[in-house]
Image (cartoon, rainbow, N blue to C red; front, side):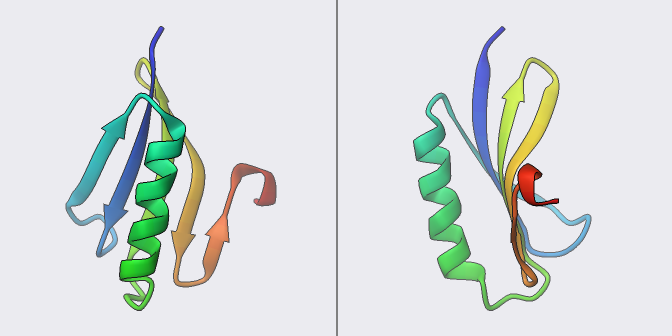
Length: 74
């Protein structure tokens, strides 16, 4: 079982995905933070940090125009 960490960006709902994949959570979080800074003015953008183990995905952080959510805050 191998865990990967993804930073995922969508500019529109159900639109194409821009994604990066790393073995280190910190690197994915850095990219997430960078993308939030760059695209926070776009009200349709959705940016996530995702933990992927085998075929299972779990969002660790999600940013939308309404702010950031984590599994603990939902």
